[in-house]
Length: 351
Ligand code: DNO
Image 1 (tube, helix red, strand yellow):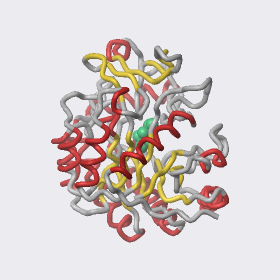
Image 2: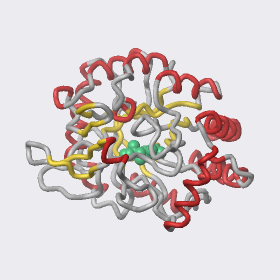
Image 3: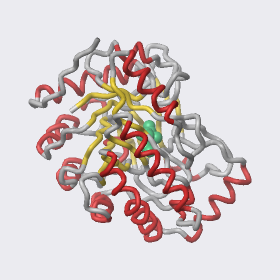
Image 4: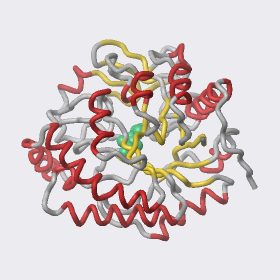
């Protein structure tokens, strides 16, 4: 098992030298950001990340994300070319020592919040979601900007894209996901990579777009689409946990050892489809963090863990959800929980 930390590359205000100073971190989670979605990543860009990690005494074993082109999600005739590029990326990443690739299958948008800086009583701020506000938003206007979103579309392109999804429901999206997995998982097996799909965040449809990685039943359906160990999950507690109907402990045991990457963060549910993010400890939010850690260990989890989001504290103002300080506190808390539950972390030998 390894504790990891997301790093957005050289332009990230959270410097890799700072990440190195968090005692428990072994590996960074990163991606190539200089290539449009669907294209092949250059070997140079991949080695640049790897070398940056190595010179900070860390490794680069997890990619988040290799994004999936919309034509694949839409099942368009052009998908095969994008799938071939995806497969090529997996081979290149495998050769560079990457062991786990996180991705998602959310149409058009990645994670969504209605507020990026909700003030909390302690003077910090955090990301928040309120369905009522979201229902009043026009997705075709760029009213919000989140780090996971592909913002290369013009307004017209975005409108067109949203229209293309009119005939895509859950069934079609699952069919297109199966087609993708059938092509890509055999390549991941060859490349020595565990694929780890990220749940939809929040775990329900938004703006009339379908979302399918949302709950226990859908998770099981996903796992059965392609029964290979390499076809696994990123278990994101803040995503699945935003729905009170999701029993995270039960979901972890139902995942049958197919969790390769754990995003462990806490959220506070404030009402129906309304939540805000909090510090990681259990008492700060609505999720039972030790219960989650225990369930992971009982299920035989031996993958990568990372803290996630948290709050902006101590006057920090960087990429929403990706501050240094609260994620570092989160990493320490999570490490403590795992250690107390008897988890074995790979021994780090830093230069
Ligand atoms: C948000 C992240 C997501 C995640 C992607 C994976 O903070 O968890 O943006 O990286 O959905 O593809």
